[in-house]
Length: 309
Image (cartoon, rainbow, N blue to C red; front, side, top):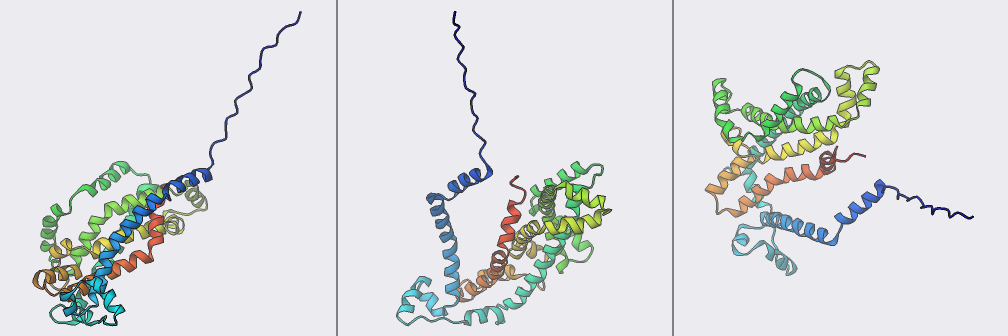
């Protein structure tokens, strides 16, 4: 008597999981769609055209600015009638009525220490929060992070009163200290998150070799923090260079930066477009150079720790 053998169901073959390269290829395909590229191009043009128009206007004579728009220079150039001059920049920088050269120097004097001071303090604080175990560390870190929601405006009067009490008002010190205090919460948070992404094996290996916290910080951490430092440095540089409120409240006539002087010119000399256009482009040229020269570090700093492999 023959017996019927039960049918054997072949095992299901599970397809291998997608590789990292496959996922990267799919993400690249989504991000490089024609619609996304077109939208990005439109936004780039919308941001660039006003700046380009300001640049062209800053080189045109005063009479031409009053008679026609900046876009007419292309037709004049083809007709051989285009006129460009550096007179606007000479007037903006060196005329006694504007004298932006001294304010330009003040902007550098304000910005460089206001970037260096918070980065230095934030690096030390971020290392302590990330790699030193002490009582109340988490509560203190949350408190520092929560300071980011405090509006700058409500701190101006108490800070100014304190500066007057210690007799440093009207100097560069109140501006440096104010910008440093306002920047520290974000700087500590950003650098702390970057440090936490550094493999603990590197720190443990350094400790096995007998390195202390100082040696670990300077030899292990600091070389790996260049993208994060550059990213925050760009943010802070742009913020301080373009600041008007803090410099106007905390500073004095001898410490005012470019932004304060240009605001005064816009109010008192609103009809002098040739001087204002040159002064405005003088104010934006330095941040533009800084951003373009450090752009690769800026992108790396923003993306650091966002993807785990």
